[in-house]
Image (cartoon, rainbow, N blue to C red; front, side, top):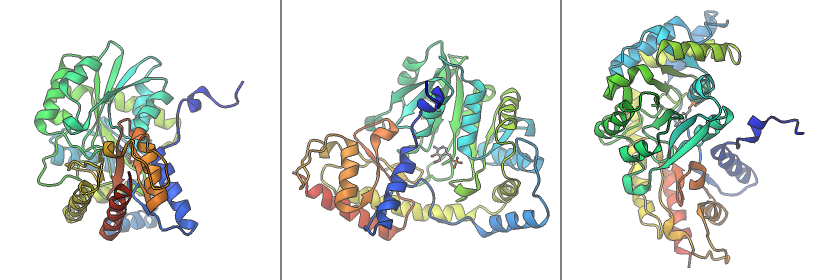
Length: 400
Ligand code: PLP
């Protein structure tokens, strides 16, 4: 009998973290590698947020806080939800956790039983299926292809729902595709859920602020107020405020669910870092102008990458509405032969070829549940992106 649990046997290490680690390793060995795998902004945390953290330390805010967040932070989150999303939560409807990933983990641990199904549109963020599997639940993957701009349709959602469905995990703008749903596209999905009162909505809004070309962001509970009582609206400071290392995520939802999450957290991590919570109050209540300034840079990089990739033979790259990822199809590279004589059979082969021939690290599409694609994170310098795309063009041209 194995010493290790069945639960740990059901999951895989994060493939995105693995690609980043491999790129770092090759770089350390002296190779000229451009890493396009990381899911974090290359910008720094704004100074006013750092100062708030330093002040919190000096003021002695260094003790345990309430398990699922300080009153001050919960009030700042309520104000954020009302100001930016038109959602009226009270502090007892707010949970604060050690990163957005932890909000998802806690919510699923608190609700999913073995045999329960959770609908996940693909391409998906790599952690969703593994978290569901840790809980003993069954991920039900619905492929949202490039033909529908990586968005799940109402008909697909309807067809995926069974008596065992517990949640729909909805992520807009999406990691890895960057696709963001319009008001009408969300409404089509929430209309389906209205017909199935046993299905809850998990809205992962972590990329809310990273949208381009005047795209208007909406969250499901805002589009369909009748779903408010069975929606967990999740968000965090990692992406918009460049605070990935601070580990603060949060959610708004019915008080009964929030209480169950607090119970889970009380027997695992306890409160998120008191200092990070103080910094998050400053992030949410403080100036927001830097978000638009940084988005202008992200948009330029997105346009550069999309245009250069579309000039590469065998690659088709749609223009995503948000996040900092593109998810090109590499269907035109499959079946081709590399100068070294290897046939590219799938997107993992394509990613390996790009890394080994040109030193460009991307994440293969199978990791996100939709092939043949690969993901590029453009949260890196414009010069590095330009050089990486030139190398990808060269690698494509060398195929026969
Ligand atoms: N949701 C999505 C779609 C993400 O891409 C990420 C991070 O990559 C998260 C949630 C979690 O963010 P964090 O745990 O860093 O707050």
